Image 1 (cartoon, rainbow, N blue to C red):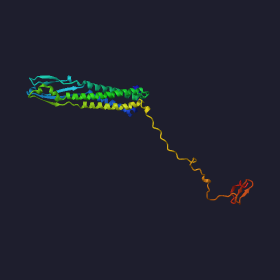
Image 2 (cartoon, rainbow, N blue to C red):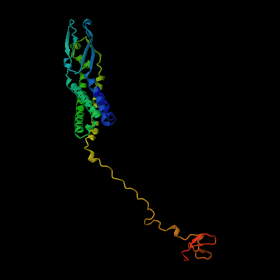
Image 3 (cartoon, rainbow, N blue to C red):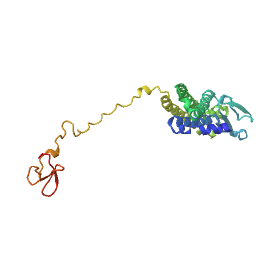
Image 4 (cartoon, one colour):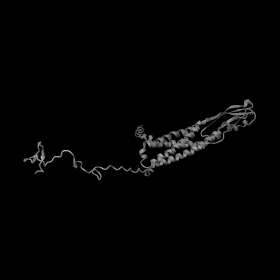
Length: 293
């Protein structure tokens, strides 16, 4: 139990949210419905033979059949309308091959989907270590996609033949008493085929799922990686010319003649401090006396 809990704790269940794992889960789910709706089927139809002599009539002749639809082994007793005798008649056809093939593909697809999901959840890092795992997965997925196509088409044709062979109006033609004058034969109950129709639909749904999953498994192989080149880098727009570069403003704004007061150091009225070499104007502000030295 501790090992199971450890595996569950280490499982990467987020892989079920990506297409690779999500589609595999759908394959597992629909494979169950495909083989179960076909393999568990059993049906029945009912007929009535009304003889001229009412005492010889049988108004409830039930014929039961089931998977794998070896109808040539299914029999029923019908009145001969002569002295209360009955005759044993068999249905026509053996459609077990297409039905069993369809169910077999469904069971194996279910088992493989279970194994693949276990690897995805618990050993996904090892699965991606090299191309061996994805390549095997790709090959098996391609085989199952083809098998679903063949088995679904074969079972669809087989189901059509089963419907014909179990049609009460067709089976009545096997009863000799129905050809005699004064006797009447009719169907009472048709077989319910909705379950078998659903199995064919599930078969083609599985075909779509397995074919669609080929692309996502193929991406895991890395074969397409060399062809997935990144887009070329886009050229950046030219930056505007900065100050100091050719064509920029080079004139010092403070070098131009400005209006306003410009002091004249040569004008009279400035006194010199003999100790510090500075001159003082009329307002007592120190000025440089280097020009007068």
